[in-house]
Image 1: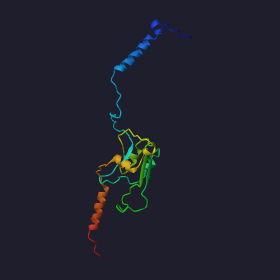
Image 2 (image 1 turned 180 degrees about the vertical axis):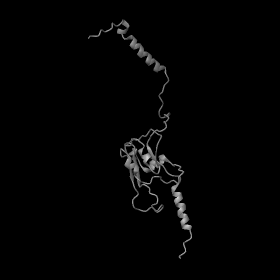
Image 3 (image 1 turned 180 degrees about the horizontal axis):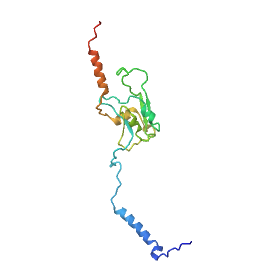
Image 4 (image 1 turned 90 degrees about the vertical axis):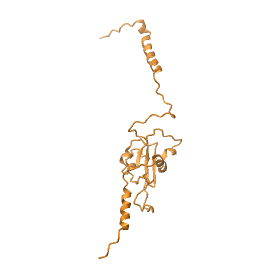
Length: 182
C-alpha cells in the first residue's frame, strides 16, 4: 500500500515556519538569564554528599589518626593509595602503642573519588574534600604525600579519645602502692 503525501503550501515548502520556530528558541535563550559563572572568582556551591578527593586528619593533640592498618589501600579499586607500615623498630615516644604509617601516598590521577577509603577507615582518619579543583603541572605534583594530605585535612575534633583513657589507667597503675608479699 502506498501512502499519499500531503501537498505542502508555499510557506511549508520554503521552511519558513521551521526557521521561525528556531529563531524563537534562540531569541528566548538570548534574552533569558545567564547561568555562566566566572570560575576562578565565583565557584559553584557543592551539594551535600559530594565526594571529592580524600585527605588525612590529625587528632586534637596533633598526631596522625591513621594507624597504618592498610584497609584503605586494600579496598581502593584503582589502587591509588599506598601505605607503608612503620616496621618493627620501636618508636621511643609511644613505645609502639600507636602505629603510624611510615609513608602514605594517594595518586590523585588514579583516584576515582568513590569514597570507599573513608567508609572502611576504622579510625576515621580519611575524609573527602568539598573542593573540586585539583590542579598540577606534572604527574609528580598529583601524587599527594602524607604531609600534604595532613595539611589539607587539618585537625579533626573527635569526642572519643581512646588513648587518654589508656594513659590514665597506666598512670594509675604506676602510682598504685606495691602489693605486700604474703
